[in-house]
Picture 1 (tube, rainbow, N blue to C red):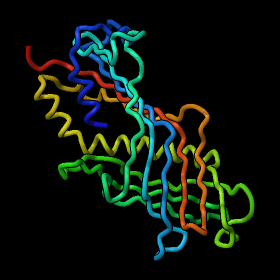
Picture 2: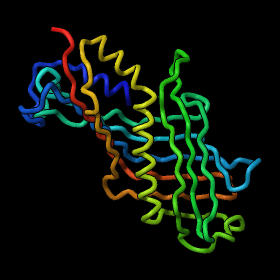
Picture 3: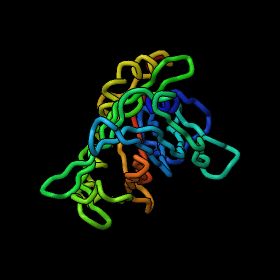
Length: 250
């Protein structure tokens, strides 16, 4: 994500982006990332009851970036619109122990007799040369509800399906927003250095990052006790990253 931000900030096409006002100064750059059809597969932890460890994540990623004046850019200038269409990265697969390292768990607990899904993830993406890049650092306790039956019967059922309450959905969105802030805090020095190398600097306190749910896809978790698997469908989401940038040399 930070690498994408840097790409957007240093893009210097001559094309003018109509999306931003002529009054935006020094320059403004924005990245939009849409994460669609996201699904996580977890395997039961044999040493810990009601705990599952992530095996695979799949998602489709669409992104675009644009900027004003010096930072103006197109994804596909030949295709309609001032910024071109969202660029489709295709289906991405992150597999635990292969191209993703770290820990990612799902745990079922209860509060006042009602189910709570605890999601913990602290992972990095592993590149083919062995280097790692920041991935996800997230912690959330999400109020959930069973589609039928009682929490006490969980272990005796072959299949259990859950979704989130409204407060659970709000907690997930808040956790994603915190994840973005934490990612920038960890990567700020590297991002600053990369911008400086390209003769650019971010205006202090101008960075804005926002996560939002889009579309109708809702969170759903399905537990298969016979197979020892849990499949989690995440909502479609959009992440916007926006910052003011200035040139530091001519």
